Image 1 (spheres, each protein chain N blue to C red):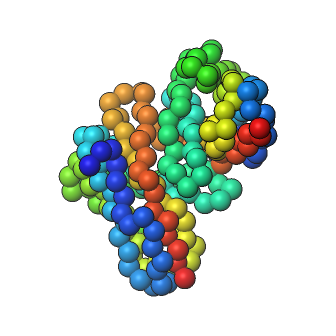
Image 2 (cartoon, one colour; image 1 turned 45 degrees about the vertical axis):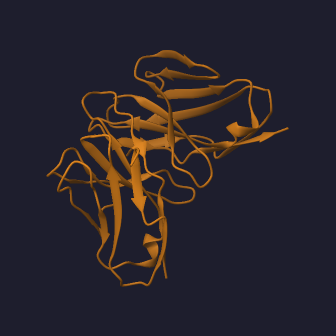
Length: 114
Length: 109
C-alpha cells in the first residue's frame, strides 16, 4: 500500500441498503477525513478523526457514521442509503501536528443510490 | 457563515499566464491551500500560504492578503496538462478546511 486506498472504486446501491466505504492509509497520519464532492459544490466534510479512538462531525454528518479503531483505517457507513447520498466520496489524511496541515486524498469512491 | 468564492470556469491559451482568484470569509484563519484536481481524480496539493505575500514554486505561484480575504493562484507557461479544476481551501479556527467549489481551467492550443 502506498498512500491512501479506498474501496470500492464505484458502487451502485439500492435505496435502503447499508453500505460501508473503506479507507486505509499507510503514512501513519493521525488525522483522517471523509468528504463528499458534488457537482458545483466544494468538498464538504462528513466526519473526521483527529486521532485513533476519536471522531467528530463535519458539515454534513446526517445519515453517515464512522469509526476509528486504529491509526490506519477509517470506514464510512451509510446505515440506510438514500438517493441524495449519490456522490463521489473522498477519504483524506494529514499529519496534524501543527498549523501546516496538508491533506492527502485517496482516489475516491463513486456511489450511486437508486 | 463561511464562504469561499472563486470563478466557476476560465479559459486560457497554451504558453500564456492565468490568474485564478479566491476570496474568503471564514471564522478564523489558519492558512490557505490550493489544490489541483484533474477530472475523475483526487485533489493534489499545490501550495500553502499563511502569511501575506507571494509563494513561488516553479511555474505556479500563490499570493495571499489576509486583510482583504483574498488569494490568487498564478500559473505561468501554461501546458495542456494544466487543464484541471483548481480548488481554494481555507483552514478555519477549528483547523478544518473550508473548500471553494473550484475553478475549471480549460487550456486551448
